[in-house]
Length: 349
Image 1 (spheres, helix red, strand yellow):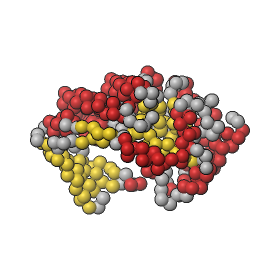
Image 2: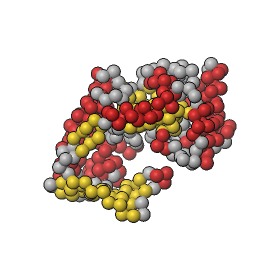
Image 3: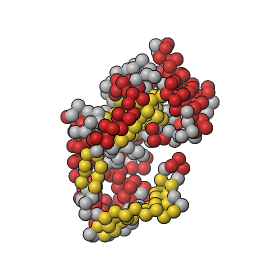
Image 4: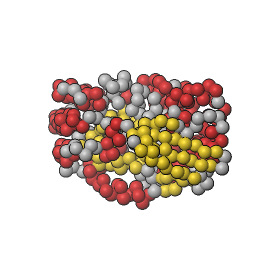
């Protein structure tokens, strides 16, 4: 087996390994999948792991299993109690049923939780995971949402966020500022960690959050965190798997080093060629479009060739699977993708 870790490290330095690295999130690998067969063809493992954890010493946290795949977490603070509830959904994921903030008074407890948050390093645990993955792939740090995204996705939920921005903007912005301040400590701990690359502020949906808010509230956080990473000779990436058409210029203006999970057509509208042209200095880790993987061999081959051709000199370029794909298609489809990539490398294209 090739040394996949070394190949991914080379691409993340901005070089071009002979074969473009192709990875699969380890947490998404179905048990039924013949992983060894795909690894022999050229598939590597990508493991996203935390290097810090957050604790709230003055908040009592209760986890409740309600049965039927429904789980709740209750946060008891001196100024109020917040509850969130999740329901098990497809592919082992969790779908939100109840978000933390439901009324204006809940912001007091939310602010208390944020200001009470302390970050602790998980460096040894990260190193153990990196050793476990070994040469089969690459282990990078993962740090969750930026402040405004966290409010939108975790604290309020997408729909309620829209109402709160209109009705309680002052409370939303106060919580945002508290989160920004809290994250500064997290940035420092991650930059000082053993991880060379960290993902942050992922899952942005530009059509929902809006380019102006992304520019005003997400971009400054990316710049701050990326700057801390640069000071330590490290890189910051973001899991950008939505359609990025509306924010191409914003990302170009950022000091983000890596755009990860970038999804080209037909699933999103921005091609690899456009991304390379707009972001010539950024590393690009492409999420192979899932809709293609359930298609014909001809379609899979065509899209794979197009992506590789558009990658140009392939410097700082990687591919992979970052979302769920029906397991019945995976072995056949990924075998085709990997074969095309190996053929492409043998041709010296």
